[in-house]
Length: 147
Image (cartoon, rainbow, N blue to C red; front, side, top):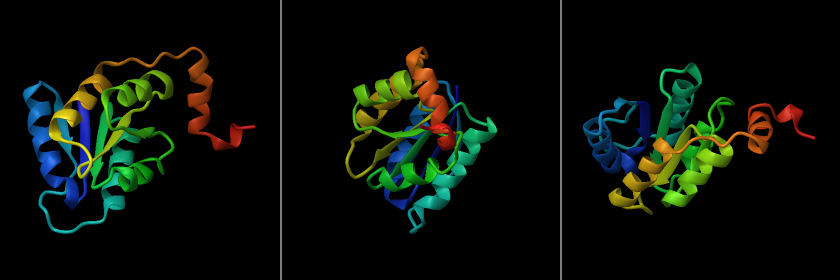
């Protein structure tokens, strides 16, 4: 699977570990940065990740910052990106099943590398259930259609 990953400086170390692991697992990984621990602004990287997903250059994305909150907000500014903040595998599973999330966000200050890997594993293999969830997901990218 082609996966794009981005972070801020607070999550650089976690991102680096996950990039290596994902490549070892056989995935094609596009590391969108940053490439060091100098202070950066998470919106820049969240926007870049959202645009990468929207363009179809990656099937799934992983967004990381200190809490996961800020970068998830930035990714979700892109209408075709559906980024869910997760902290354990069940939330990653439900994000895929019910919301067709194509990006997950995690907080490097809140989650360990083992739990991050567990979330990503579930996120990558879980299918969207469709059915009653499909019309709701369609509205996520088109707020004007909400009643």
